[in-house]
Image (cartoon, rainbow, N blue to C red; front, side, top):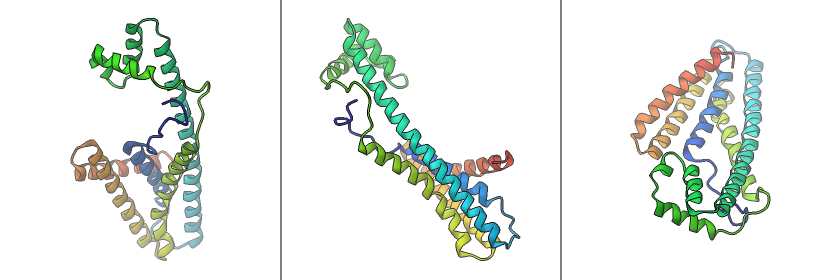
Amino acid sequence: MPDVKLEKRAPVLDPIDRVSEVIFGLIMALTFTGSLSAASDGREEIRTMMFAALGCNLAWGLVDAVMYLVGTLTERARNATLLRRVRGATAAQEAHAIIADAMPGRLGETAGTDVLELIRQRLGAVPEPLPRARLGSDDFVGAIGVFLIVVLTTFPVVVPFMLFADTAVAMRASNGVALVTLFVAGVALGRYAGGIPWRTGFAMVAIGVVLVGATMALGG
C-alpha cells in the first residue's frame, strides 16, 4: 500500500483532474490567441504569439508535473503515517476512530463498527511501510503524462495559425477547435459523473468562454 514496490499506482489523474488540466491548457493558449487582432496580417506578431503560448504552457506543464510528484509523495507519506497510527492504537475503538476520520466525505460517519474492524484487520496484514516515502519510476511516468496533457492541449489551438495566412480565418478555426475540445471534455466529465453528457459538454463550453474572458480582462 504505502510501499512504492507494492503499491499499485493509480491512473494518471482522475477524469476530473484530466479535464481540469485540458481546460487549463486551453485557457492559457486562448488568452494568447485572443490577444491578436483579427485584422492583423503581421506574421511576426503571429509567430511571437505562437511561441509565447507554447512557452507558457511548457512552463506550466512543468510546474504541474512537479506538483504531481509532490502530491504523490505527500499522499504516500500520509498513508504510511495513517497505517502506523492504526497499528499503534492501544484499543480497537481508537483505531476505528482514526480510520473513520481518514475516510472521504461522510463515509466515516456511516461506516459501522464491523466495517471499521474489517479495515483495521486488513491494514494489520499490510507489509510494514518504508521508513521514508519514496517515488518510483511509475510516478515519473505519471508526471510526464501530466506534462503532456497540459502541453499538447496547446497545439490544436495554435495549428490554424500555421495553416492559414488569413488571421481572421485562423482565429475562427482556432476558436472552433477550442470549443470542440471543451465540449468533448465536458462530455467525458458528464459520463464520469453519470449525468447527461451533452448537457455537461455545453456547460463546459460556456464555462470555458467565461473563464477565458475573465482571464483576458484581468490581464492574463
